[in-house]
Image 1 (cartoon, rainbow, N blue to C red):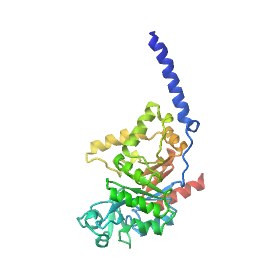
Image 2: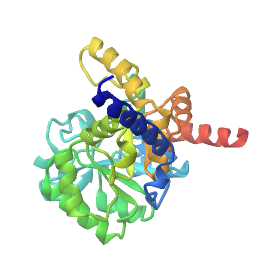
Image 3: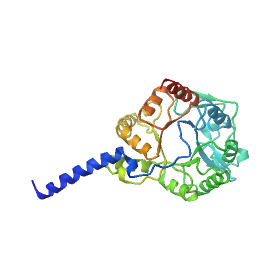
Image 4: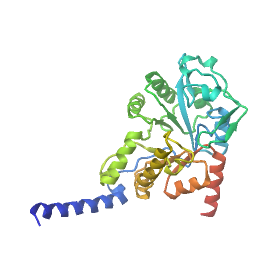
Length: 315
């Protein structure tokens, strides 16, 4: 055996042992992050399977089911009003082929009388409330309700207005910055660094890489939330690609890479809440909580509340 191998093999063995040891005992290296709230039940777009998405009526319905979190998306109108809307273009939501940013708030159309539930194809939501709502009004109506606010594009005016509203309503600890793009998240954190924030896509891949390299136990993590899709919903209710073959490949690959109890347990031990979206079936609730997830984001808060209450009663 060469001298290099004589040193390399013991060093590699020691590294592997230490990595596994600290993966299971992260608190020996890291003080767990303190969270102001815990998410078991999150309402996607305010609970868009039971009422029209992102309306006050949907949010009130979700909170009647003791939702811990409202998941919202924001856009900016032409006259500078932050509104709660998933889409920039209003065609799907209202039938009007105009962008939110091309209209003043007072000119925004009503939602359609029914909207298909995105993560439950073939199912439709209805409601008596069809009005788009200002983020300011949501903060005022639900002052102590935790919310996740997603910003999809690098709109600095929108980001700074959200940050200012959060400060104005004293919501720094209970409002989460969310974005898939790291460039957007950097601007969000700069606008209000006191707000907790979730992983972006690239940061999520980075954590997976560190996990498989055995380096994750030794690296600081500033994020407080990992809000991720559950791989088992790909090709069932979530179709990230237009090609069925790519969706099938994504389902298999992501299931193998992401659904690791040891990874989720490690993050939880470090005070990072792991929340899976967007789950609308009891079988998916079972999978998510079976993996050790903190919580679930759903379009159907009543169904998830029923599941949580029944399992608390039998546990």
